[in-house]
Length: 116
Image (cartoon, rainbow, N blue to C red; front, side, top):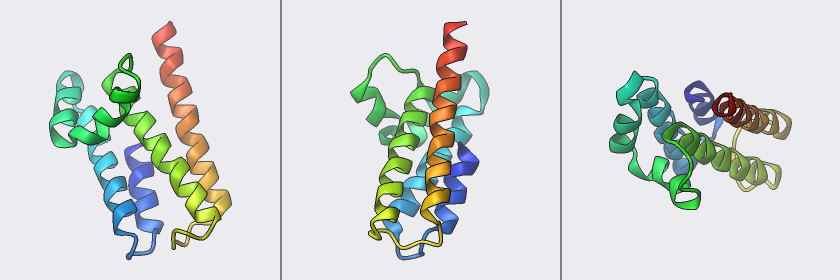
């Protein structure tokens, strides 16, 4: 998901500051989460709102799921705005939807591992 966030950020028009910033913040969260046992604490300290946004909506999530939910929300919003022309980018709507579906798949895999 870290790579996905950076990928999306680099395909946006440079004037899309808000979306680029959110993509890089989310990337930073996933980089921090990859640091092992201390990852969730690092992620929360590094980007508290990025992790906490989803925790507020669903307190049962762990830090990774919360970040993934935030990423999915970001990608869903981006897809809608790309399709309607509200975001300037070189991302085709088909590619944007594919990247969003990858987030859905990632969340599904996370949930499956928790069940086992």
